[in-house]
Image (cartoon, rainbow, N blue to C red):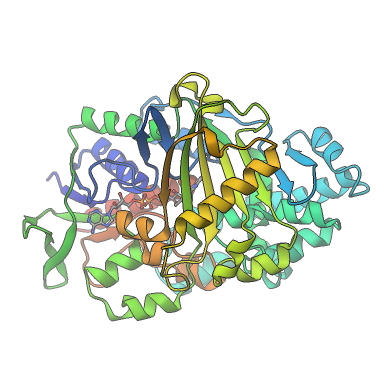
Length: 493
Ligand SMILES: Cc1cc2nc3c(=O)[nH]c(=O)nc-3n(C[C@H](O)[C@H](O)[C@H](O)COP(=O)(O)OP(=O)(O)OC[C@H]3O[C@@H](n4cnc5c(N)ncnc54)[C@H](O)[C@@H]3O)c2cc1C
């Protein structure tokens, strides 16, 4: 008999799961708290500008290709590769590093600071490559039925990688490269996981392989939100409806089975199967009222950065600024120690600037630029008061103007700021943590909130805080893993 599925959340995880299931013949409906789809992959249109509000690039593009193949569709958006991948500038240093995938071009950037960079980098990337290929199918693209099952799967990983488990990201990079500039730049990718290189496991140096060797970084023609618009169109073809402005607050269950979800207007929603795309830890605590996911227990877990994001429309062009740019300070170690816990780090902020209109001219009026700035900040546990948001943003704008040699303040015609409070309230993210639960060894794989419910046999989870983790390709893998679970559940009935 055809089964009905209700998905809570129209983030990438919810949409991808909906399409996979609809293609398999399930009757699917999505409920979304906000007035438009996408979750963290969202869009703001304001004052003639278009801004991607969250992700500005993705890696592992083959996960999108595989997703389209699984769903038997042509990928409903076009993406293109970025070169340079990004640029990096340190405070007080006029040099800008251009991070190319091409190893010779890359090595030329470091010729003054790191002797034999090319040889060292190739050795580092070879190790990252083996880490990637030896773990991705065994530990990342797999469901785990228990901690024991997780342990058994991990035992299949080549033991040659064991020492890596005892190092952090920074230590691993430092084994191969010695100059401060090179180690800091290669360690930046740890921030993409929402933590610092000092508290991210060396296992994640496999990401250096994905960025520099395996695949690279990609942007979407017309902006990242085209991913969401494309998926919503595909869902329409499959008669999947999305009900907006509807937030699930409560539930009814009977005999280990979820019978209904209840929204803010007390309306009941029923289906055979439920998939939660809302944060897997937060939903268990706030809606299912599980003690082990109470606010106090969640506060004790390790969470990724709170993002301070700034969307600026400026009435001039910035030819000297590339697509993706990192502006770092001159106190990396001290900064990393403070950034997620102490508002002091904001006195000398490190930040990222993306010029969306560089490759997507439709996102800004003629002779104007649409800028997106992300500054990692402490989450609401450590900085609950954001009344100083404008001051902090002004200091970032001033610093950026100094670095690029152009005062952009008088050019700003559109300015929007999201603090961790906004991220929390918009998407139900714990204390405004932007990327969800962090990827500590005790919060990944078999230790991460499961993609099936502990009590209700017909409830499953997809997205950044369940397996395998955060970021667009990981969320696509998550949608595949949860569908495997659902198929198994239905097959056993
Ligand atoms: C500032 C920022 C920059 C990022 N940059 C990148 C990047 O460049 N590249 C990259 O790969 N990743 C990036 N990420 C991470 C990426 O955005 C996420 O990992 C991914 O989008 C998470 O998707 P999801 O489907 O798991 O969750 P979400 O996108 O959060 O979707 C969950 C949905 O559920 C809805 N919801 C929540 N609770 C309820 C409820 N009770 N009832 C109904 N609906 C509910 C929410 O409104 C939301 O729409 C970034 C994230 C942030 C915040």
